[in-house]
Every structure is written in structure tokens, then in C-alpha cells.
Picture 1 (cartoon, rainbow, N blue to C red):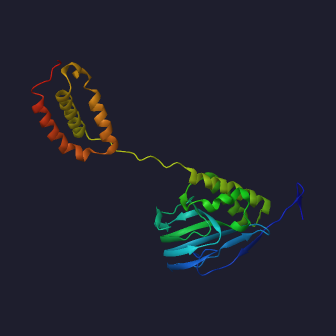
Picture 2 (picture 1 turned 90 degrees about the vertical axis):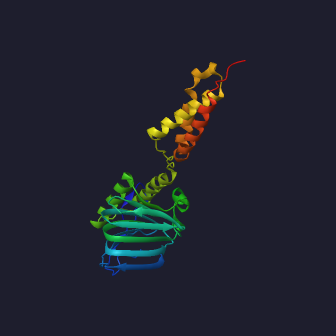
Picture 3 (picture 1 turned 180 degrees about the vertical axis):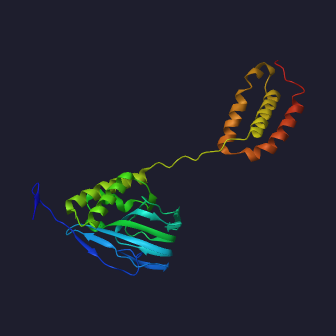
Length: 275
């Protein structure tokens, strides 16, 4: 057997088998319901002494539902094709609702239950199943990651497509290559969970609301402060508008403006003077 840098190279084995339910995951247990599913011939590859199993298959059906838990981490790349609708729930929350698409990446940690619903499925996907009991220290963080559905990463996509192409053509890389690939991919996956949550964006106030706030602030200013400091009045409208815009109080400010403005006009008839 060939040697590389003093390390024994261990090559994997490939299996092609026809199954009636192309949607059934390679590992785990649960419930599956499908309609209009077509038989498939998945391609699987494994390596002696490695914690990784590769699984590639075509999946076609009208609709499918599953409730599933697996003892392995699983990373899935949608190589080509799509769904018209995909909904995934986990831990009692909706994790994803949209469509599967070419290039989408999904990760589900070991032991995590997921509930999925799919419609109009016609796609080919590749999956890496990783046994957490024999994982390298560099990939131990996978157990702490959340469920990640239909993410996008050009590096992971390129690596999995290349591995899929090699295995489909009968060229099986050695276990050292696969171990390094897993280490790189798991580091990229962690980046998904580390992404900052975008701050919510507030819509701008309408021109009519802005005018009412300015009128209100002007009358309050004139009725409250001495005439000597009225030239500073532009400061208050800016403060009120900033607060209103951030807190989305437009709907509540509008009727209030009318009442305050009319009261301010009555009080402004007797302008205060300095004493």
C-alpha cells in the first residue's frame, strides 16, 4: 500500500444500492410520510477508522414529512434541483420556511430532533455523516451548534461538490484527505453560528407626521420657555423626531399632536417674559 510522508494511506469503499425510499436518512430513527416518491440508487462511501460516511442520492417526490433524530452530525449540500416549499422545525420553533435551492447547505447536530415538510421535491444532494464519538478535537464544537438550514458558503459547497464528483467517478480519496476536509468544513460551519444578528431597521416617518411633530414641538417651546431663548427652538424638534422615529410612535403621536398643539396655542397668547 502506498505511503505518503511516512503515514499509511487508507482508502475508502463505495457502495451503490437501490432503495424504495430515497428520503430515508442513512442513520437515525423516526417517522416518514411521502407521496409520489420515486425509488433511488444512492452512492455511499466510508473509510476504515474514519468517523465519516458520505451519502449521495437523487430525491424526487410530490410531498414528504418527517420527524427524525440521528446519532450522527449531518452536513447536507443540495447539489442541484429545488423544492417549491420547505419548512423545518426544531426545539418547538420554526427554523426555516422557504425553498431548497442549488448550493444550499444544511447542518443538523447529533441527537437533535427535526420536523420537516417538503413539497414538489426534485433534487440531488450529498451528505456527510459524522460520528461524534470518534470526532477530532477540532470538531468538538459541532455538538453545541444550532440547526442550520439552507445556508450559503462557497468554500463548503466547492469542497463537497469536489468530493461528490471524485466519488461518483470512482476516485476515492484517502482517509487523511477526508479528515482534513471535515476539519475545514466544521470550522466554516462555526462561522454561521458566529454571525451577528442584524439590528432591526425602523421605517422612516411620513411627511405629515414630521410636520405635526415640528408644529407640536414649536408650540411647546414657545409656551414653556422665555422668548429670549426661542432662537434655539430647532433643537427640540430634532430630539422629538429622533425619539419618535426610533420608537415607532407615529400612530400614537398623531392624535396627541393635535391636542397638545391646540393647548400650546392658547397658552402662547401670553408670552412669558424675563423678570
